[in-house]
Every structure is written in structure tokens, then in C-alpha cells.
Length: 129
Image 1 (cartoon, rainbow, N blue to C red):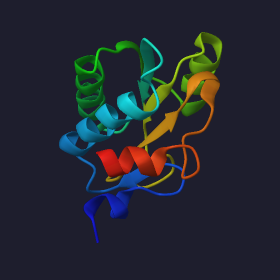
Image 2 (image 1 turned 180 degrees about the vertical axis):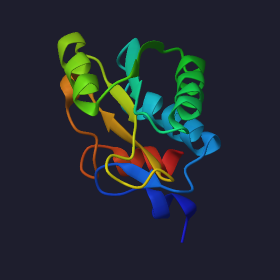
Image 3 (image 1 turned 45 degrees about the vertical axis):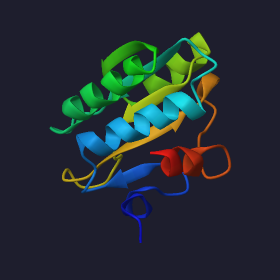
Image 4 (image 1 turned 90 degrees about the vertical axis):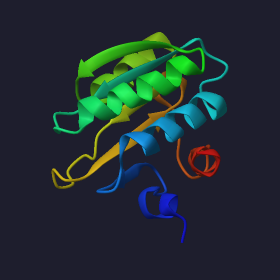
């Protein structure tokens, strides 16, 4: 089993083994697969102690791909979706929702908060990462 298979689900990425290197690879692939037609990506994170470092890794990967990043900072997933809707931009949220504090994850969305899931590019992002 490939390590990505352990953390990539049908609709998001979650797991205890999510680290900065993995987030860097996923964010770069997200920029190539989903966000390449846009100049910017909205990024937010939850309150987990690991989230700020993972956001830094994601932002570095996105900017390395030529993306401008609108950092929301600490916010809810709904706030990220709202910003993506209002600005018509794709987004990346570092969160593991209601999973234990030892987990972290990514929720990805297209412009106007359209889902990025198994049917709309998530598995392609994982394969490239």
C-alpha cells in the first residue's frame, strides 16, 4: 500500500502521519491540478498545534508554483469556503475536523468552494504528490 493511500480519502486528506513534506507535495500537486488556472489560492487553518507549520509548508509549495496566497490564518472551514466563494478562488484548509488532536488533514476546494473529491481531482492530486 502506498503511504498516500493511508491518508487520502474520498473527500479529503487526514491522518496522524501527515507531515510538512507530505503537505508540500500535496499543495504543489493541488496548484498544478486544480489551481493552475487561477492566480491565487485561499489558505486557512484550524487550532491544532501542528496546523501553523503545515500551512507554512503549503504556502511555500503554492508560492513556488507561482501562486499568490490569501492567508486567512485561524478560521473555520466554513470561513474558508466563504472566502473562496466571494473571491472565486480555489482553497486549501489545514484541518482534521473532529478527529483527535494528533491528526491533521487538508480539505481542498475549487473556485467558489466547489468540492475537490474523488470525482473532481483529489485522487489525481494524490497520484502526482
